[in-house]
Amino acid sequence: MELPPVAELLREAGLPRDAFQVVTGFGEPLGEPLVADADYVCFTGSGATGRVVAGQAGQHLTDCSLELGGKNPGIICADADVDRAVEGLIRGCFTNAGQLCISLERLYIYEDVYDRFLERFVDAVESMRLGTDYSHDVDMGSLVSERQLEKVTDHVEEAKAEGATVLTGGTARPDLGPYFYEPTVLTDVDESMALCTEETFGPVVGIYEWSDTDDVVERANDSDYGLNASIWTEDVDRGKEMATRVETGTVNINESYAAAWVTLDAPMGGMKDSGIGRRHGEYGFMKYTESQTVAVQKRLAMDAPPGMPYWLYAKVMNGALKLQRKIPGMR
Image 1 (spheres, one colour):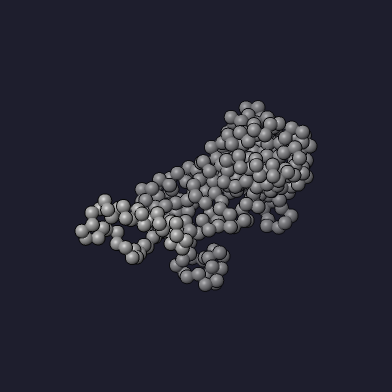
Image 2: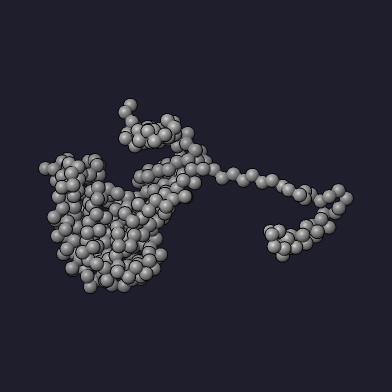
């Protein structure tokens, strides 16, 4: 079998042949044997499959980490640079046709900049170029499968039936390819709709208005997911304070996801239904290891000397420990 380019590069760099192996196939026949034979399982995928993986890992007492889905919020504050926010959020919502676990699917816009932001955002979406080639002339490509196209279509159609307004997009594009769907922006999305509560994993974003900081943080957190969030403000200190209140594993200020994603020394992962454990950084490597403590007893034995009663031994040892804490260099 021909190896993927990443495997070839790792071997060329000197990684031992068996240290990196590639197994291809479908999850149902492959998943359980892989989990059963693994020392550690790191999984990225849907919440439903993640629960299956975690259950199988638990049966074997195998440690695991899971990076699962997201319904990621973006918060645009009153002092945000609107043009910069529009540019960044186009990428944040529609890169890879929205098929990133860290893509943004909910945008909360402060009331004073709502109309201005929305007009520029919709204009930018409508100017996006769709296509199938790998050139820089294409802004967005296809969904991955018929099943994913059906899910995206269902979310949009259900929202429209329940009163949501499509400002742009909302239509499949079979003329471009079997799984193409237009980048789509909706308003009037009730926060009980599936479009607001369930991961769409496609080029679809709902727009909401806000006026109170406590309220928008509560609404951003009103989700079973907690993977990624984005805050746009010229007051970075305020952005950091808001970020500490948002219940997601990563929060990007004045960027959609790339700042956290490319910071490889910083842990990355999710809260709530977005998973357990972290990738990247020291933790991302050390989680694959087992901790072992090797202790060597020096000087005094742990038992009382022959003939000394334990009450006296305990008293002497207690006094010695107190003295040790008082003498520099003896701790």
